[in-house]
Length: 510
Image (cartoon, rainbow, N blue to C red):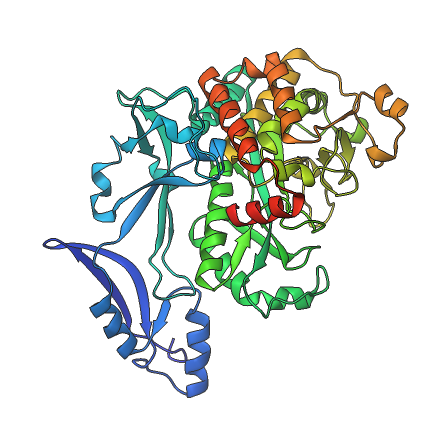
């Protein structure tokens, strides 16, 4: 419109070799605009900030003269998220992507045995032998071309499936494991899964990040520049962010995203973590998702919200008039998860620092039980609202709480779904239910209700997993063998560290 500033938009085509071009950035040249008044000009530039890079002519010329001419796209393997929740992969020129869609690029099986400290567990099932391919999933590509640092390269990565060199799925690929389980729900049970991951994290690295009141406007405003860039980046990446909010801890924040179906929910969890770290890095901050960033700090959790529908999309967890309005199907599903939960913790709370969080009165989880709106329960029935003509049945979902960002979203979600499916197939009865903090119950009351304590440390959780033959039989043996090997190696590496040193180390790693 005539009343708006009209910037000259420049698309930079990066050339590699002869005439191959890639338009990777949109730039507004701030001193080449037509406008009615300086005030409108400044207002327009502020409005454009989330959608394009703003530069002067001189800055633009310097960038053309000084930046490399090849953009790279990172092909990442969520396979490594299986074991250490560290995103790993390989990079290649964006202009060559068409050469990789069908055949992928090389990968090494032993990489699955890497600890977070980058030590390959020895022994492991792979050793120096074997080769794999990272096969990119075209629909999963993430591109964030615009960030707070105009000199930073675009963030561009693609989720992959791990396959054998002849094209067969690899048994240890967590993305394939999750996809297979979702298909099993569809084909065997006639069910589909909708899910969303919520993430809590702590910002540090800037003197201006002072202690602000919990959940306050001051805390929100303190991180407003970071929050604005993050939400724009998440939206650009297709993550569908809902809210950014200050949390209970010092400089602690949470980001939530809309639920989605299938494997995309776990992909989004990886995207949230990596995009959050990238925006923080560009703005001079450090974002840590570690479950316990410091001794006596407020813990960081990941909450997985799950609902179940039939193949026509009708919600199946809600049944008006049942206990907590939870359907018979939902009770059996929850009973399966709770039965296997002590073993699941080895996969959903997979690092030594995880167990500094899973304690009574931490609003995390210390017992295997279900509760209505009970934040001390491992499975929480979330609130629904009767406002705005929203369907209660469509809103109804269960929240899995003993989960943190040191765990692979794909493996965690797959294992939880497996346990729930076993509950449905076996028609289990839900017993472990409480409306109060389970730690306030007596030992006799907990035993009567079949409410069991969760493991107190990683060694205990690994033992629980190794003794759960039913759950182990549903997981590929090479995967579990590698997992046990690397977790033993990780425990050896951190052996002797006190809690303060443990928190400090994992806050850097995650």
